[in-house]
Length: 259
Ligand code: PEP
Image (cartoon, rainbow, N blue to C red; front, top):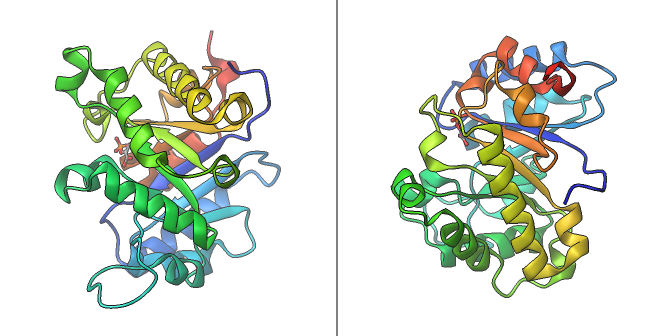
């Protein structure tokens, strides 16, 4: 199911790395190395404290700014949380929601992720919804069931009119930060499944237009073959996005080099 044009997106998730100065310098180095004629989109997701520095560094470029999380509440006594409006005010256009580290370490449930999706959409932020199975789930043939449950949970009660801009990132948990990448075929198969679920929930137009990124040990030396897959519309990149030269190679992927 890959017959219409979907603008590819390469996103860097900087997790809990870098000082303000380092984040600004990395963003500036990426901006400097960008092909001025780049046709696809680039998104940087630094920690909350580094959003401002990155916003300043990428000003005037075609790059977008994302948070790594968002609170579902608009304001109030929610110590440690950051609201959608505050993220917009800080220059974010996107918010990563439901990253596996949030699910696993911070015990975020599909219900919480659903609330975050609704709040982000209501405020005008584009969610980058992360889903993916653990190694145990894959080995016990539960991958598709897990993806279906996560998608049902994240989109519960959200009308089709509200999901036009939503981005989905398929990130097998066993591939995140482990150096083990899904094979291009494994990723493509999962992406086809995600698109079929998107069709079941919202219909064919959404399924054909929704961008599905792959995440999990994407590197300069494997991005070309991943991006050569027809249902992979981009990448969510952790470790490799912290090195300007490597991330620039990921951004400027070349599927044509794949034989
Ligand atoms: C991620 O942070 O979403 C990720 C995929 O990390 P890594 O590229 O390091 O596996």
